[in-house]
Amino acid sequence: LAFYTAFSKATRRLDFALLADVVFVRKSLDFTLVELNKAISLAGLTNLPLALLVRPLRSTLLWHAMLLLWTHSAYSTFKFYGSNHIPPLKAWRTNPIADFRSTDAKRKVSAMKKVALIFGALGQGLLAFTAWPASALCAGVAHFYVIELDYKFKLGVRPYAYLPFPLTALALGVWWLL
Image (cartoon, rainbow, N blue to C red; front, top):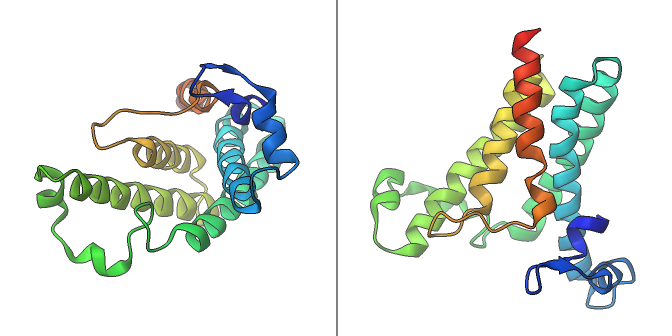
């Protein structure tokens, strides 16, 4: 929470007043909950590769990751369903290939969000119902990457949010070598 939330995208530096805004609910409860949800998802996604790397703690870390990611999914569904983040079910009737090829930025973003949600649901299912944590990790990282892309396919996350990417590469390398 500290390094993610305290990072200012405007100044590109740590600004602990931003963290205080969240911790002390200085802006609004909604703002605090959204920021906590981001931190929870990042913590869950960071626990997954650690679970593959630290064998003695694997089951504990997987359980923690699952609880964090369930919390993130539940809150995100509650907060964002029907918005640009989670398009309503009626929006899923369009042709996704046509949406990706469209010159309309909103259609492209909507298609990307749908793909991200499919990866997220796949990752949750693999994590909860299979013995394939490496596959769940791949789907989870794919969800995170695609959900954070803008319509120009640019990833605009704070530096601390890049942590799951090298951890995932390391964890998958170790997982498949052993």
